[in-house]
Image (tube, rainbow over all chains, first blue to last red; front, side, top):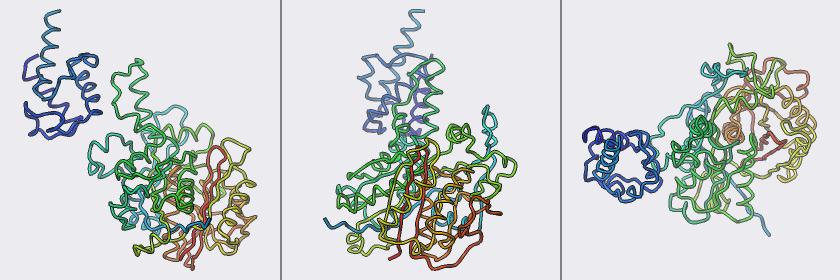
Length: 87
Length: 408
């Protein structure tokens, strides 16, 4: 999966699940303060990312460190790379 | 203790005839039925009834996403009706978080569509991982009340009545008691409901739905009519702003009516049907509570859903108390049975009738059934001075509710 595909899929989650306009989806955007998500949204964000990327991340400790969209891109990218390495 | 007086100072609706008071009343005035054929229900095995009165879900995106995410269809209806009632009453947002304003909103259960969605997501593979975090807030039985309270920032008494088709009227009765006892100054109260095959299906398995008019939906339900064959489900919400009388006078509020009497009771005899005896007890107790007499009731808004049994029992009870004097009509022919919302939506229509001194007739009542005779059935619009009204609701569980309102 390319970096751009990860970005596009992640951004689509934010557009569809959280009704956030495309132009706000900048890599540095803070998901709480800039995009307005809250603790309940984070649960749904995890569900949506799991569905979108076909990964299991609910129990990943690193999810707690996510603050920006770039953090999500990097997080998904790392998981996908790990998957690739173990295949 | 001196009991407080309770008045109605605001009303709001979402109904199958329209999403505000104007189109709703216009629909009643022009004798319009909102009942239609439900093509999408024909796929359900064993479902005999394919008719319903849907409301239109619209403008829901005006509710911010973070408020809307915990709302099923019926909570959206409730929030929209509550906003109308607040605007109509002129109550300012500042008063909502005083602790003296609350809400009591009932429904048959939580959002039936959301409950169905949860099971569809979870059950095929017994997998919880796809469940959205906010789904439970749509499913819980107090979802409409909790969502309205959160959305409006109400910090007073928040509760939900759960008495199926009597939920809406019980909510108004509860609001009346809370204000009467001095516990709250303002209560937003009423009911909300949404259509779903599981809801109509619950009546259908009991042979309580209309099944003979699938090809002629506008002819059903037929309250009190000799050819009635059961109820037709509807959906929507009705919310009223109840207010302590002095509180309303002090702010120079418009007053629709005073609630003067209320009673709720059980039949203690049958889970799915109430009976004439307990309905009579309920109406008599509401009249006693209102310190009024049957001849003072200028209009009775009947529950009358069009089921063979229910209409017979209610007609018998009304006949015993009121004879053929007080005019009676049912609004189910226009909007179907909006279940937990019906008590509130139909009371609101009755308040409008009171204000306009007109009675809207029972739609589809072409020939009174022999077992419903002996009442003053209204089959054409009637102009008449209306000062006092009685509203009935009867529900699964054998639960009755009756409310008396008076013009002031």
